[in-house]
Length: 466
Image (tube, rainbow, N blue to C red; front, side):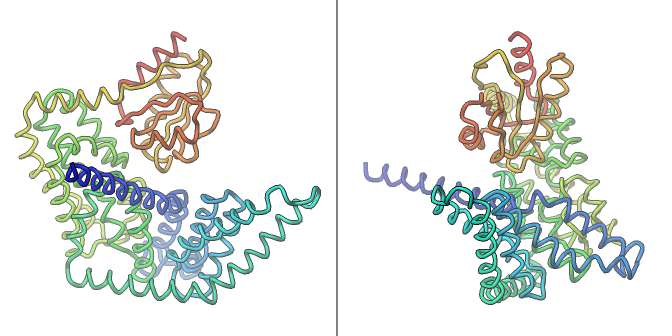
């Protein structure tokens, strides 16, 4: 009895820790993802106009420094504060971030990811403390001056105290990263990155950890291998090709479409269920990822900014002059290694076992409640960031809705920003509880695959009947 309780408790603790890690990772990525366009803009300007770029231009290259030192950290700080306390929190997050930016001579992304949420949290707590206590007619005065005074204090504290601490921490992390790179241990990061991706930590790792490291390195060297560690489509492509060549039934039939979405569209989440059907395939993606990183390292490959989504087109667009062969070769080798290892396990899968796994996954996707009302005007797809898989699912259902002649709006959104007036919300089964908390009155449909999902056709038929 005691042993059973202990085991159960350990399992609950493990799940709790996993949830905390995922939640923290999502929080980090939520500060970076909305600003990816700005990072890409900086990357394009860098690739074009720096002295080693495609069209060197001393005048236009003057944009590179201010953008990475000021614009990008302030955007991160604003977004972090806004995530905590709305627009008002965003303003305080940007003001607080300015303190660490001015107090440092390196791009202060780590400081922005700290001070942005701190600024939002402080103003949120202040607003809660004075809620209902401000005399009528003085609301705007109190709101503006409180933000100004608190912003001043935060900026000064960041400049005088927090900035130097963050700078020291940044130097320690940079030294640690350089040690790993110089020791040739970078391929071993695939032992953590590839399984982490399968556990839906891909955005957190890429935009929350690797992205800031890559930007700091790219600012000095004009490129960084860190942009390639998580975004390389090779390992996932090898998995899908193995299923296409040696799989059976629906798994084999769905693989070609998944290849296009993954490799050309850049939606890596599409191959995660294929690995989860046969967990031994984690060995294949790890081997593919490590071989790709080794190739990138040996050939000195790197990108100028984070390619998002992780499409081969995005990778090539962010590839600096003289690095195309190295980047393409790394992707090809990682694909070949992943395919070779995955083929062994896919061939060994029993046909009935594969079918049962697929049917079990499909049954989960079909789980949904009946519609409460006959009047549905808004359907929302929700994912972690509201940009990748949800946009893909929304596009697929939107075309079916239009073909059926239904006048229903279909949107995609981050799970924490789902509209309160949504009638139906489709989200990954891991995210459904969060979506339900945001929109408790909506119908919620849990799915595990946003592409070619049979639940879309079933939903359209029910909408047509109602």
